[in-house]
Amino acid sequence: MRVLNRLLLTGLLAISPLYAIAAEDAPSADPDVTIRQDGDKTITEYRQNGFLYAIKITPKGGKPYFLVRADGSEGNFIRSDQPDMLIPAWEIFKW
Image (tube, helix red, strand yellow):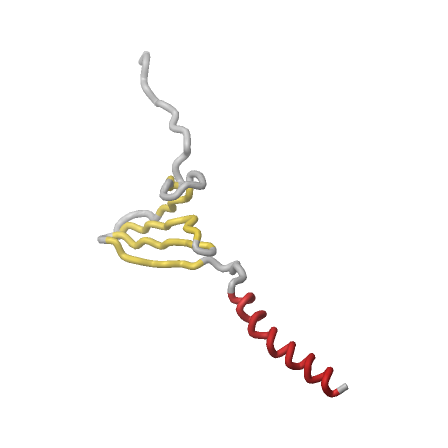
């Protein structure tokens, strides 16, 4: 019986570091935020598990705006406050 208890204890102690390593690789729910200065702008990058999904740009004397992914490709960002479709506002006739 003592030998069986010792084997079980040894097995548990051998497996516990593997469990700790697997727990570190689990995806996190909190985003990683990186803030940097680029000239007169403050750029805040939001990443989730290493995936860049949004960028906030704050000009020194202006209103901040967000760039979000247009699709799944790398580096294709659009402003979130501007619509995707621009409707022409040409004046054809004036009365």
